[in-house]
Length: 131
Image 1 (cartoon, helix red, strand yellow):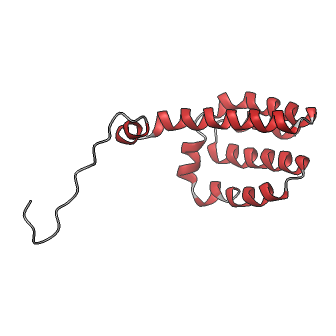
Image 2: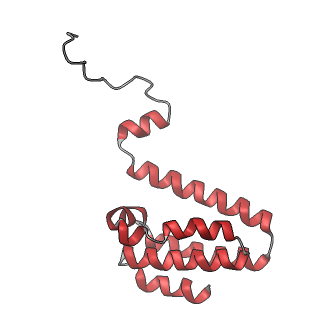
Image 3: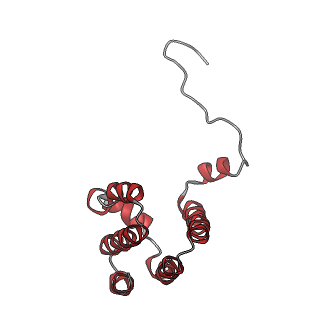
């Protein structure tokens, strides 16, 4: 895991290579924890860089900032405290998800998510009816 994390520093300029390295790191963690179900889910995400390179680049838009998370993940695995690891990773992913959504969601989606706008978007009238 440490070697995979260290290699990520050389990939920060390439979102696809970074995503591949991140998936390899995630796979190492999943295997270390013995979670076969999560490894099966990870198999679906492993195709993301090749099948959706633009989406991958968008999802991995803060590569340099994410380097610090690798060491924290390694320490969580090393500590062997499943409950602390589960809570910590869940909170970390929620923060990352919210940060990404705030930076990338269209304003109207962001407003709806925050409850600021409950109005419905105008819809097209049906053919043959005057509105």
